[in-house]
Amino acid sequence: MTTRGDQILDRPLSAIGGKGLFIKELELAMQEGRADLAVHSMKDVPMEMPEGFVLAAITTRENPCDAFVSNRFAGLDELPPKAVVGTSSLRREAILRAGHPHLVIRSLRGNLDTRLRKLDAGEYDAIILAAAGLIRLGLAARIRSVMTPEQSLPAPGQGVLGIEVCSARAEVLTLTTPLNDRDSAHCVRAERAFSRALGGSCQVPLAAYALLENDRLWLRGFIATPDGRQVIAGDLRGAAEDDESIGRALAQMLRDQGADVVLEKLSTGQ
View 1 (cartoon, rainbow, N blue to C red):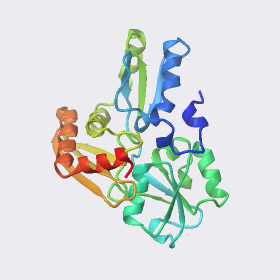
View 2: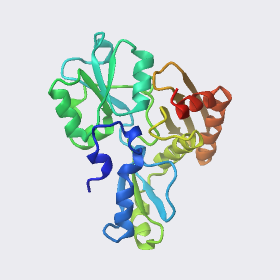
View 3: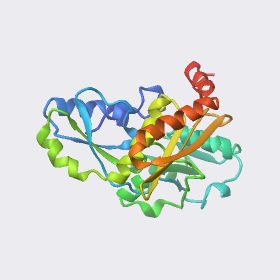
View 4: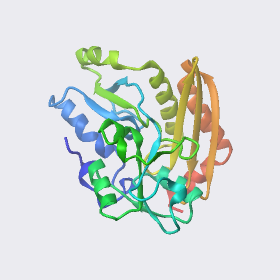
């Protein structure tokens, strides 16, 4: 299905209704019986699930990192002043503006083929994409370098597919639940709880990335202004079963450090 989020490409996603534009029409198809389930990139799933729907499975995570894609340059550090970098993400924009203020950041919308075509046409010197999308579509060869979480902290749920079903469809829930990956689910729940507690949406430059080792969860997160001038970051560790509590606690830590001031600026457009 082609959704409104796929069709409206001349404006930033944050200006046309957000990530829900990719989801609502799929949910309507499930409600009307035209579809039994929907498969989403978890980073595109709104933080609050609508009534009557449930995430039946969070699948095994692919590479969660951002990818640097360019025909001329091997990495961000090679880009000269005024080089044009394309991204559709306020999170990536804030990271780029904070660490590479000499670059020109321009909006880049469309599906993967459209974005790569614009790069190949010379409209951009480089573009930043999710590594997982390129890998899943057999386009890993286009990746010039994978950005580490230290260079570009991923979005909540990045690299993970989620399966959404109508909560009343018990038979579909039974079929899809075995696809759930326990470790990925713990990480994504922590990331989404952090984002939810800070009002996360595509209008908020926000990152959250969790790692799990020996049932211990390590969550890193930040919130920023789009110009990258204010970045409030932190991390927290705890037991895997406390995933959502860790997410909420890290959000409160950032609020204690001044995140509310950043959120106020974002809400008033300052």
